[in-house]
Image (tube, rainbow, N blue to C red; front, side, top):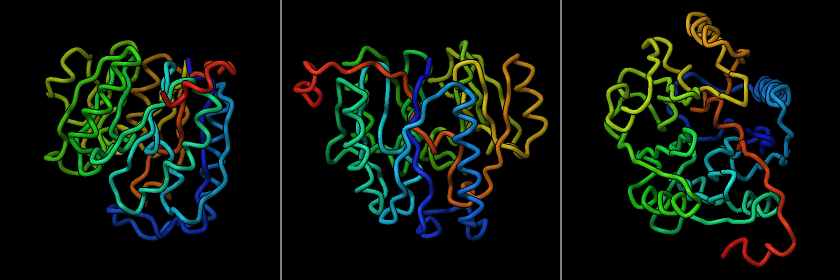
Length: 271
């Protein structure tokens, strides 16, 4: 059960961020409106938002998911794999101790982007990609085991058209995983019921299951209908400006169940 989410709106430097999409320059004013709608959707799902200020120093900083892995048992600061994003985790590091008793961190030479990490109940799938390296995946799996979770790795470097693992899959809950065809047969997914997505709708593979709600990208009516068949309320959001910057729904928030932090735990937060 998620209770909170950390969000950060796009900054004035948003258009200078990293992208391979080839869809043109983002419209900042429209991106801000889309982000506000996204935040409202999270609140409609019952989440309390922790709103961070825009950060002009980091054009990609609205994609807060890449900076940390947050769980009900603790949080892990990542080391984003793109050099231009190396400083983004610092601002998240100042926020996490207000909400988590245990905090760990990925250390050099490991790199991890949160977009490469998919939680399926008490199990995590970690994508090894151009942004998350094998050492980062190894460190992350160790921290997750300390927190009581299991983890497996999936090498996606040979999968065409996806930047992060969650560009190609999302957990629907109840043992079901939405996947693109290129990942559907992977051994790491053999325990899941897979829901395949059509090639022309692969962007929609990145979705959000928040408690008893689904949030999906707008513009994919067949997929929208398929998701409604699962019996959960579905909201489709326009993500056009974030798609131009290689972003998607999960990228824009860090969602977690808040566990109250007692004063006696303060000294152990980074222990």
